[in-house]
Image (tube, rainbow, N blue to C red):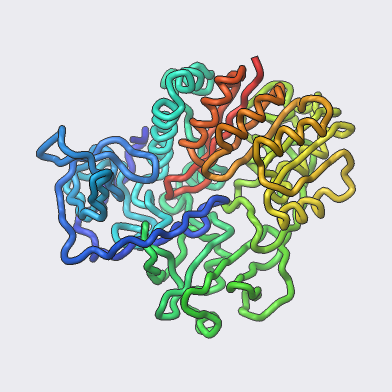
Length: 501
């Protein structure tokens, strides 16, 4: 899958005993809830599979090795081109699912898992931990192209293929964030092998019946205890949530444990409705401070204050990368898929006085730099969480011409917000939840006729659906970039820039 050939595993040895898989934890703004399924009785049925292309959701499409035209099985923990022995985990009239439990013919892109507990029968949230990081990005590139073609339709796929950044392949490269790129380029084998670990500043756990914290099984309500948190930043690992007796006395079965490591100040731990310090002492502190380097936009360091349980991008590099990409795309003289840095003042010289609408605006990650750069312009933001809107008001204090509205983003609320602005917005920025904005909201947005739309999507299927509606409503795709903000999982972020025809 990748242009590089990672080290082949020492042997395709059979993995350990099967255990239920776990919940992904805090994989981003749109969390995955566990789904209870009937427990399987007796030994799992096994099948030898020839593994094909990746599918959206962290599976690969496979068929019986002795029957290339046989029933499709969606298999996890495998790689394209492999032959695996798989244990069936779900089998009904609509879909067959399986976990690869023995690798008979390994791919050159297979590596020793950076999180073995997320392997077959383990916890969720690390379904690509056995895949070399460059190959993970190729996997996601294939999935993005497939969703745009299959769900968005031929017109959407053709619009993407025509972009300069799609190149001769006609597909968008999924780019690493700064820390992964640096680790891979370091020349140090250990750093490269562990790239993508130690990046998450938010982690969610559940206390199991035995009082030990863990994560849920894949499509299961069973909590499996953990012995380490390899995707968490060092500040969270050092708290000792998994093994320290000082935490165990606070745990109760079923309790939610949320660890938050902000960029400013010490971590906090949320235990249901209680907040504790990193030393397990009760505290009245319920807010955290975050800093975002926006020097590439000419704004220096931005400061944000938000509730500890409020949403914030979880990869340590994500806020600065998204702020630079999205704001440049929204206010730059030309839409751009370029990275951070550059002459921000020159690139955004035409931003003053612009009318901007932002949907799903959260605590103001994009709202703050947008408001600072449109001095003399107008900004209207809509967010469904009253707590997030309160945080945004604090973060935007003193900035004029900003109207923050609390309420669901619907076709009606978008139309009303547009009418309140008097004139059509010059640009609309939207960062919807995992299911996307939807046909009605996108239709209302297109009805406002902004010159530019910047759509941030964390799900390629939802992106494809929303793009198709925009392309049917007099918009053309001007730029697209994809970011690997969730290494070792199947998730990634995409930014699409559209302009009115």
